[in-house]
Structure formats: C-alpha cells, structure tokens
Image 1 (cartoon, rainbow, N blue to C red):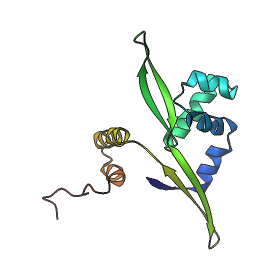
Image 2: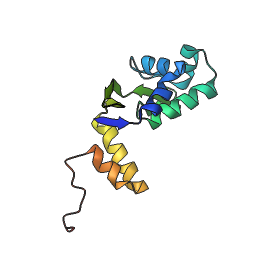
Image 3: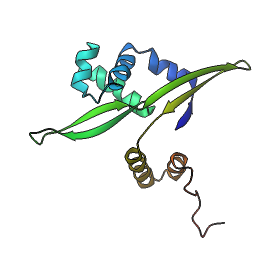
Amino acid sequence: MSKQWNPDGIFDVLASKESRRILAAASVRPLSAKEFEQICDASLPTIYRRIAVLVEYDLLSEEQVVDPDHEQSKQYITDLKELNVKIEDGEFSVNLEIEKDTVDKFGELFRDLGEGHRKSATTDFPDVPSKSPTEK
C-alpha cells in the first residue's frame, strides 16, 4: 500500500529523534511504550505523544497482547517499509510504502465503516466497489 503525504508533515514527524528511534526499534519486533521509553531515554508522556503521531501517519500499528498472567497491554510495530522523497518541477513529494497484513486491513475497514469513512475504507481495498450494486 502506498500513500501520498504532505512533505512538511512527514519531515516534522521524522525530525523527532524519538520518532526515528521508535520506528527503527519497532522494525525489529513489537515493543511496548515502556520499552520505547528505555530505548529513547525519554519520558513516557513524550513516548506516547510520538506514538500517537506515528499511528496517525500510519507509520506504526498498535496491537493488544495478553501476557502469561492474562494482563492486557499494547505493543507497537512499524508498518513503514520505504520512504521516498521526490523533487520535480519545483515541488517536493513524499511517498510512503506501508505494509499491513490482511487482519490489519479488515480491522481498519470495519472501524472506518463504523465511523462513516467509506471512502478511506475503499482506498485500502481497491477491488471492493465504492458503490453498492443497486447504485448507478
């Protein structure tokens, strides 16, 4: 999956040392916010702010996990596979290559449908028609 983003927004997100460290660490394995806190040597509130921005830009996904004591927690993994910056005709463009598994895509589809975001749901599934069979 590929998305076009405003270069200023992506540059702002990636300008943060903590955001870059979170993405690098989350590319190895899913990690908790507490683990990011140690890796980044930053406060937990700072880590949660960075996580929120990274999730908003689809660079990080969150998943609920249950530990052996049946305690639930969240872990995060990066969806970013590649970032390309293009300069052409006096303009910058940023293309992010994001990879999500089918379970993530269906979860987003149902969440978007529940929130009434039909357009974004069909963007993730191009083979699903945007109109119902009865619409013309």
